[in-house]
Length: 114
Image (cartoon, rainbow, N blue to C red; front, side, top):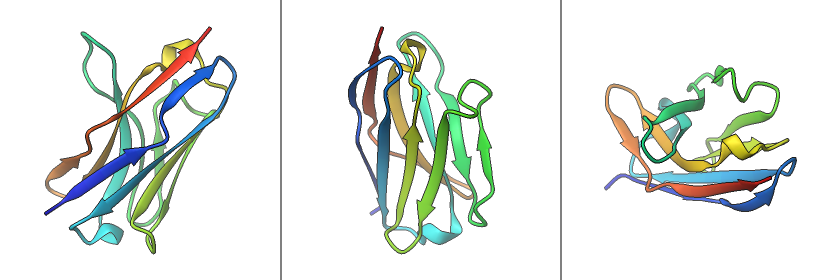
């Protein structure tokens, strides 16, 4: 059974930082592209950042220079370090793992107050 369990969300003031973690089980984690997406009510889920099995990274323009994605294959974990947070970063953040099929976590709420 594949499981993706996110943690690290919460309430933070504008300009603050949070670190999200996602522990993945049930797949050969090191082979998968993993990443973070986010969604706000009434909007489509959007890409935040991804990291490939070879550790190539991709970021949404809106988070470049502020967020950093990383992975620890020994711990089957992907991280998202979020700095200089803005109110518009408020969303539910979802962990994703994919090769030909995408697996999703349940999401963790991030709220940035102004």
